[in-house]
Length: 238
Image (cartoon, rainbow, N blue to C red):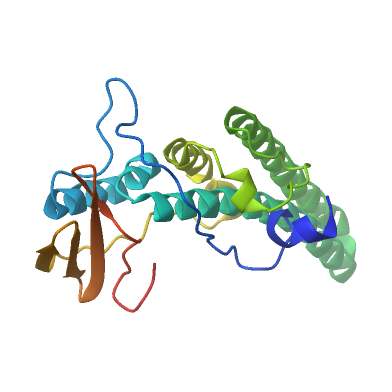
């Protein structure tokens, strides 16, 4: 993998994944037999988004977003899955190092400490292998680089130029759900505000309001309402 690409793509990167904006033409529906994207109204959209958050349904969450934040979410989840696999690999190496240190300190119990360290490393290596394989399968499905691949020119902007962002969010969201069982971080839930939509003001195809005191904005495209950006929890978390 090239040095340039490792800043964004390497599993061992220490940089925080930056959500990059890009354009995406709106598709009117997820497909035959599925619910259309967006909502009939801002209120209905917020309810759909909240249900998606409660069930950790990343595909439904992506369906609530306008094209630009939908693409940002797809890139963020893709990069997040990459980083989580890298973190798991690093934890396996840490387990080995800690076991060796404990063995030196324990003396007579060195054999037991080393055995426990080997078992922990083997468990983590197996998890990394499993998740890496699933990651590469999804990458092939969506035309994205596999873990060992370099990014083409333009980095994520180029990679995500023609992907189905809703499908990417749904598939990679399922990948990272439960991954915390191996890393000890627990399942991640989209941070959607719990309060009611207040102060809704509609002007043409734009609307604004507040959720838990935080501003939220909407846009209407082809008669359907979408979130113009991911809302934030109280305190600024998004």
